[in-house]
Amino acid sequence: MAEMEVRLLDEMDIQRSIARLAHEIIERNRGVENLGIVGIRTRGVYVANRIAKEMSKISGSEMDAGVLDVTMYRDDFRSRKVGPGMQVTEIPFEIDNSTVLLVDDVLYTGRTSRAALDALMAYGRPSRVQLVVLVDRGHRELPIKADFVGKNIPTASSENVQVHMKEADGVDEVVLLRGGRRDD
Amino acid sequence: MALKSSHLLGLRDTPAEDITAILDSAVAFKEILNRPIPKVPTLRHVTVVNAFFENSTRTRISFELAEKRLSADVVNFSASASSVNKGETLIDTIRNLEAMKIDLVVMRHPLPGAHTLLTKYCDSKVINAGDGAHEHPTQALLDLMTLREVYGDFNKLRVTLVGDIAHSRVALSNIYGLTTMGAQVAVCGPPTLIPRDIEDLGVKVYYDINEAIAKSDVLNVLRIQMERQDSGLFPSVREYHQTFGVTSERLAASHKPITILHPGPINRGLELDADVADGPHSLILKQVTNGVAVRMAILYLIAGGEK
Image (cartoon, rainbow over all chains, first blue to last red):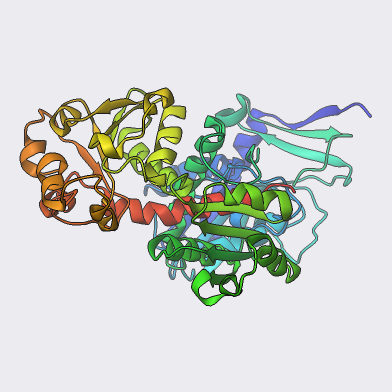
């Protein structure tokens, strides 16, 4: 079947979602004290950077997002074609006793988030971890739920949701692919 | 993209893409070593046999740590305590281990090419941890990683291997790896320890250590094996040091700092003076740290590639 692409969110939609997420995060945590932001590589990092920037604007205190590579913690290592795609994890704050905002672009099966939680624990013991996603497309295979969601997009499992970010793709948009390959 | 090669037998036929892939991954693995919990679950499903048919401390421990940091199951095997002494052949030994369900063999063997033979008769993936005077690819890769950290790339980097080139697997793997990556490689030592026709591998030869120092950015000083001093290849340890020893006096003649590598164990005062080995331009201990990271990368990429 030929691949069909539908644009679900454009640049302005994404910007509004990120601004709202930043406000919600600050509201629910009553400020930014003790908060650390970590993006899951690759596009989670860009989303995390933008949320960090937005939160810095709102709160007036400078926030930097860290980078988490979860490749080593994935549960599908045996069935995936591995490559040298590993990148360095950088966490610019003390994990112990902080509230960590774990940021990804799309929440789907929950397996990436599961791997990210394990990866995070190798760095210390956060007092709390909150999951932030730009898009929740459903179809969870593990008991994982996001604390902050930019946009809920109900999908069929034959469909695929892709977040494109200027940093990697030259454009800000969320698209729905029909008949594309399954990609988590 | 996985590696093009499914085993790591040597660097002679390892393409630049594979070397780059290993070195890139090794950077990420090095970070893992510095975490509060320096262990990842990635190779939980992999069983590795470290088969050392020749003595080794550093390489074996480095491999073992790399395997354990990746959560692989590890079995160690040394020839001195094995059925090899009862006359079992190499193929039989490994096939018996394979019958116990192993996935990967890290082997050091005194015979060059033993690893290639193994790949023909066994299903396991094979990593060469040294075969005679042939190759020692993981040592060369950790040398490359250490140099890349300092210089960024290998383009026009002048690296001279100093010492017993003829009997050194470290030298040969370094020559292959460095030339593949675009470095300018030279060797330096007494003529008796430099193989004839080595220029065919694209390396320069210096018989004068001072000239080598003047024309190099990096000296990779190889160990002079004490066992060889009775072989007549050089008159005496003392004379070797006087003629080819890397000393701070000799290095001072160079107008710029020269990076020092050594695969260890060092004979202080023989091939390398103590103050140079411990000096500011010595990367010897960084090499050891990088050894674990580069071996993790190799294990990950070899074990993870599709069979």
